[in-house]
Amino acid sequence: MVWKHDRVSGADGKPRCGWVSDDPLYQEYHDTEWGRPLRDDRALFELLTLEGCQAGLSWITVLRKREHYRKVYDGFDPEKIARYRPAKLEKLLLDPGIIRHKGKIAASVTNAQAYLALKEREGSFSKYLWSFVGGTPKKNRPKTLKDVPARSAESDALSKALQKAGFKFVGSTICYAFMQASGMVDDHVAGCHCAKE
Image (cartoon, rainbow, N blue to C red; front, side, top):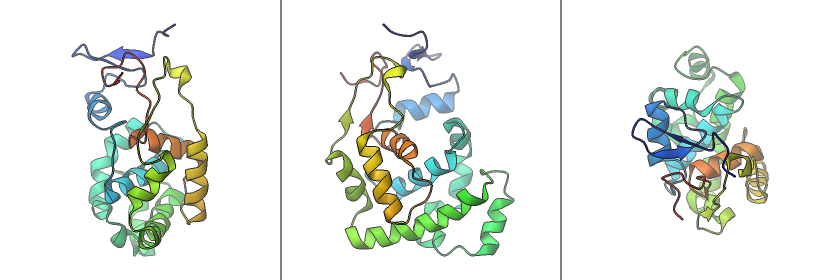
C-alpha cells in the first residue's frame, strides 16, 4: 500500500519522495543532491556540519541558509574554522542568516579540529566515512515513508566512531540523515523519479 504522502508531484509533474514540499529549492535539492554519492572531503565536512545545525529543525530551514553559511563559514574550510576565536563565535551568534545556537556554533569549531585530526590519521575523510557502508551506496527502496528508519546499525556505528574522534552533534539520527543526504544510503521511495530500480 502506498500512503497518500509517500510521493508528491511538483509543478513539473515529476513524482518525488513525500518529504519534499512544493518549494523549488527543496525540489532541486532532492533531485540533484539528496541520495547522490558525495565523496569530496570538504563537501562531506560541510554536509556533516549543516546536518548538526539542523538538529531539531527542518532541513529546508538549513537549506535556505546554506549559501549564507558558506559565506560566513569561510567556504567551510576546516583549517580556518578550526582556528575560530571567541570573537568570531560571538559574531556568528549575532548573525540572523544562520541558526544562532551557541552549542551548534561551538561544535562547528570542535568538529573542524576533529576533522583535521581524523584526516591526518586516516588520509581521507571520505574513505573513512564510506567504510561504514562498505564503500558503496546501500540501496534501500522503501515502499512508503513509514519504511524509512530514523537510524540504522551503520549510523549507530558511525555516530559512535565520530563521537570517539571528538565530533559533536553526531548522534545516530543525525548520522543517518547525513548518510541519506550524502548517498551512503539511498532511501528514495519506490515510485520517486530519482529511485533507480
